[in-house]
Amino acid sequence: MHARRETRERDDALVDRARDGDVAALDELVRRHYELAYRVALSVVRDPDTASDVVQDAFVKAARGLSGYRGDSPFLGWLATIVKNEARTALRSAGRRNESALDAVAPVAAAGSSPAERAVLRDEARRVRRHVDRLPEKQRLAVELRIDQGLSFREVGEVIGSSEGSARVNYHHGITKVRAWMTEEST
Picture 1 (cartoon, helix red, strand yellow):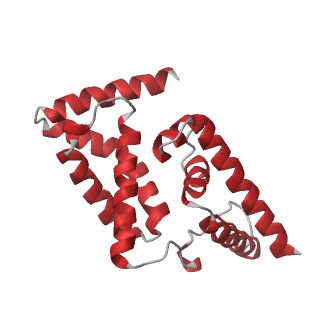
Picture 2 (cartoon, one colour; picture 1 turned 30 degrees about the horizontal axis):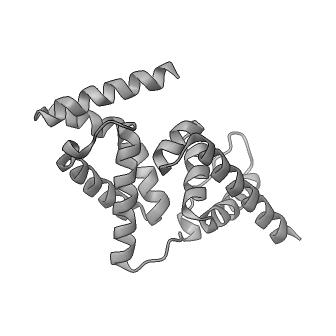
């Protein structure tokens, strides 16, 4: 809890400096939050190249709109909202559906396992990813941010624009649906 408050205070100090034209402060905000912004974009657009473009556009928009950031909520939540909106815009303009190809799933590496075991794990990871991709956006983001990024429920809530409790509920419902779909598929 203390570390999050310190991070928020450092972010707010960087935002103040960036508003005053300090390019190094803006660069530090980008460095600090790029990976999470990319993950949010990727979870919406499902394409690495498009996600990179979205994040770049989102940071440009955020830099131009720093005067609109009031500090009522953490900078990360404000930035994540911009990233999600940019990602949705990219999807609409590309006319794409919000799905990923099965071959786009990152390979799973298990230390000390045989090639056959690794193949089974990769197949299982693809099955899970396919079902996670079916979830509504907030549930999908909650599951991915919690599992892939290891964020706390409070941080997940900030990113998806909800309370900590809502983040927990979205995560729980998402995991429950994925388990049910996988059970249905296995029977």
